[in-house]
Image (tube, rainbow, N blue to C red; front, top):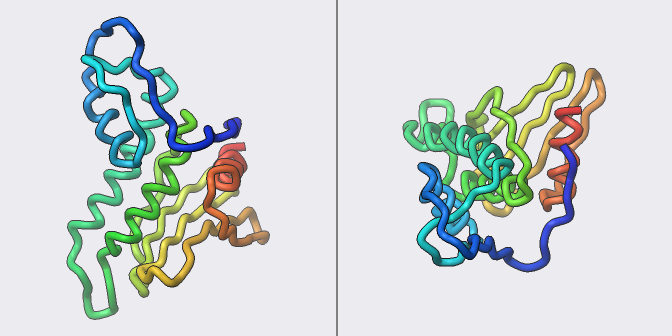
Length: 172
């Protein structure tokens, strides 16, 4: 996975000047882009680039896992079970940066919460492990935990470049 430079400012996805056939997923893609503050020019149809479609498919699978967590009970005898809406929102924005660049979000190995109610999304590739942790409380910073063998570290910068590099590391 190569990490392209992000566009400055909110990108506008220009629809082609001619009419294109609606794709089954065009409306979903337009809603996803709009929900993350991206403008899609008004037109009768939106042509979707193949890499964007693949990137959205990976993101949609991860988002589905997060939506399932929102159906859980608020808490059990051990503490919070359902992640906070805030945590889901931070995770979506963090991962959607990859989609904006046309990069595929790999399927999660595990999605859940810990004993404090923090959202935890985990990926694994061979000996490499990556986990996005978004605490329930807004005042606690989210981070990526990563490890390979007995080496591990945290990454607190969740801007596009560092997140892209960490997912590239995972798939290398």
